[in-house]
Image 1 (cartoon, one colour):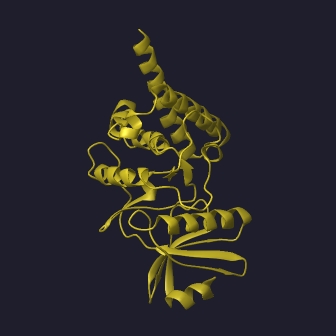
Image 2 (cartoon, rainbow, N blue to C red):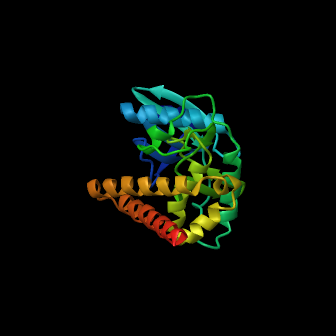
Image 3 (spheres, rainbow, N blue to C red):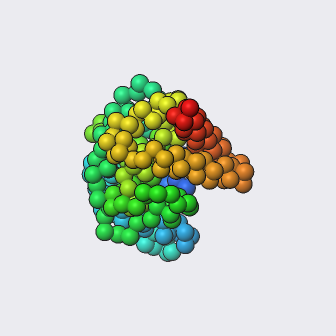
Length: 253
């Protein structure tokens, strides 16, 4: 793989990324000819996931997604070079100016038709079913801070490996726990997503059912997996589901 990189970017140095769960290699490659963000995979799962991510990223394109600069296969490895996005992850805490950038990106996504390549269905992505999830909109499904890079040219969304074809309100429902994890109360998080008409038009009972099922999923995962990020998602989805239950109880009394 080093020969492939050298041929593309010249002599280079590698700065490993802190994340990148769907590829064996995820790193910034600083070469004489170019700086790119490289993902590489050799396992069956990793190759399938990376091939999918590159296909979707190409279909989405600028300004939402970094460009796919090049892609090749060598000695059993799939290597994909993405445009390197220079900037920090988005700050999603209450009052952050990055929230306005996120709102613009979410608005654009909500009007982006799912590209031709076959995408995950809501059931395949979530592992559970609830009403009104089917649709034709491209849904990233993982808008956590690490996947939102604030660059000089605006917000870039990275890691399209779990993109789905679904109803646009699903993007907002999956964003709520990340807002809670960034310091919003469940009520504040819902107030933030309520700026989007598609959220206000979604049946509250459908939202409550989704929140309950998503919380149950992450609770099961946290019981099986001690990783901190899994426990965090179990906490944040659980807090949202509990808020939904309290709200439903208040409305009945």
